[in-house]
Length: 251
Length: 221
Image (cartoon, rainbow over all chains, first blue to last red; front, side):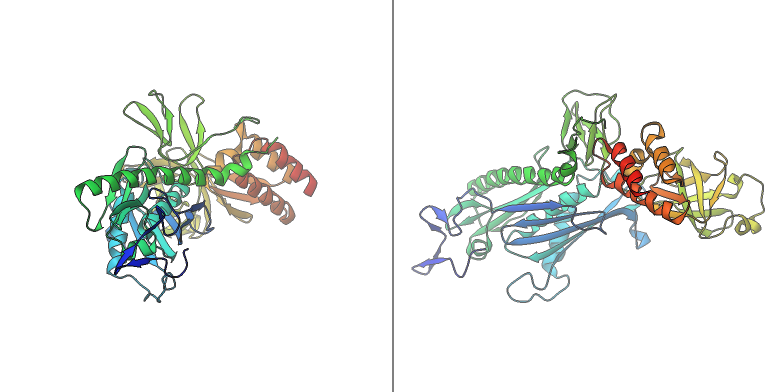
């Protein structure tokens, strides 16, 4: 994480670049460092711990399992429930615990982003529960949550057409850049998270907060798609890594 | 999973084949290409399939499972079979003719039984039968729950792994397709067998496992 106030001010306007680099030293099309580990929780059916810059996310997946309350059950397919939650200590000022307008919205769009890849017809009458806990937040938590959820769902053995990968692009100081950090998000002009199915390139989530011209939007979309491809490789590696230790170095 | 051959681990969405082929579980075809749908080990022997590394047990017709009775309704025993779906054992599937009022005399709530899946319909209603196997209520012994994905490895090719564990640990063992394993023997033997089973579960995807389990059992007997 970057320390103190890294934002410069020139004539009352924030500056986001120094010597052509962003304030945390990244290039315009560079992601923050990402670390993913699959299978970290013993009691969940599938789990994942993910760090993306200053974001720390824990994902737990349960199911397919019986639906409670019963009336939510669907006779011919499984349902997916997704809960995005921020820990009270995940932000600078203590956050009041529990769901709020923002986390309810994020839960809904994230569920829709994941739902489209799940082969729900294979498990009628069941539910797949996904729980995302944001332990530390640093802009881009919904994207990081989706990335963790996809790994945790694969780890739970849930049949899917592919993984889902999410990444954000944004506009700061008039420039379109990849993966905003907290300061860039707070003082920038726009933030645009997207989620894709890397296998097909299908977009399963797209949002935009702020203003961009159509050309900037296109540029941002291109950048975010590239970012997703990089993250996708890390997600795959995390899953393969989990069973690798035993596969290699034997006989 | 032969010794020496490195199993390839795949994740959902991985391309398995450019050409349409015979596809088994854990894989699907789209636009003439084969992709993985689950996280697991690729098996290309006679058809392309992915052996899952995780997941819940989904009952199939013909599977033999260990169930525990949770409820007795008018003419069915309702069983938990370690799956998202509960299973029904109808009174007429009991080997002998019995009266509905006397069901709890034969199989009580809490009993563990070995049963065969007679049918699973479109709505995942699971029916069991006791007619096909020598009927068993399991009494005494110990029950282990493992992931059903490890059951084929625990049984081994032609039953090689499980019969070896039975022999070396001097326990009688029964493995249900749903991942429930029942042991009976002397307490110390059961403990040893349980450790060996744990070892198989943990290292199921590694080659040369049978030999290591034999060594383990002999060293700790």
